[in-house]
Length: 260
Image 1 (cartoon, rainbow, N blue to C red):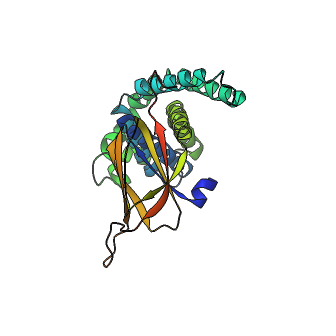
Image 2: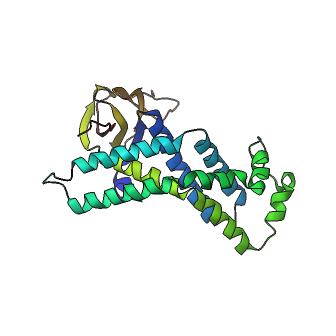
Image 3: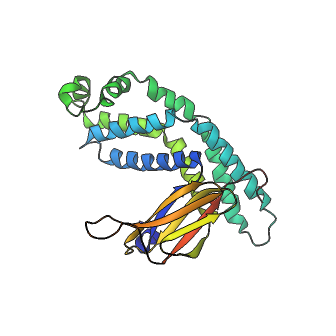
């Protein structure tokens, strides 16, 4: 856990649909990593998480959108190369990471096709996506597969997990760069409410003390948004905050070909 996570609570809200997908995928990849670590003891959790990740990827044109966004990141950074206050070593490192991630995206289609064409995975995926399928008695092929030596099972788990890692790394890089491009400012929400019009944004980040009783509800689109702070519902208190709330807000811009 980062020091930021220990000392504060950070809430994120995407103002572009593709960034919503990026955040969902980031979460799915974290869940898949966790499921891999526990696959020996909870194999169904691994397969369910893998299939949920596959479905999310297949529903969206991730490769094309992500390649465009990484190219925008590269072009923006190249315009900073002659800026005297920019750390050139850090900049070159970021450019190399973008190049590597973009190159690796070329192979994600083939890797995902191998997952989709895997006959064993397909046979259990068609069953696991049905509601209420939780027992091995309904998946005899999986029961037989799990009777193999653990070392062989681990090889398969690692192989399936590895298939999505180029995409996971590219998503992580894109979101990391996007987050870095928004600096936190201190803001006061009067009576628990904040509204703002702005230049096109990709992502909002709201940072609050970990002991705050409130959480933000965000609505809006890329050039206008509102925040309403709420408390966890109880039987006696109102949900909406009715006091001034100090918090920190970071606005990550939506990059374009003209971003400077």
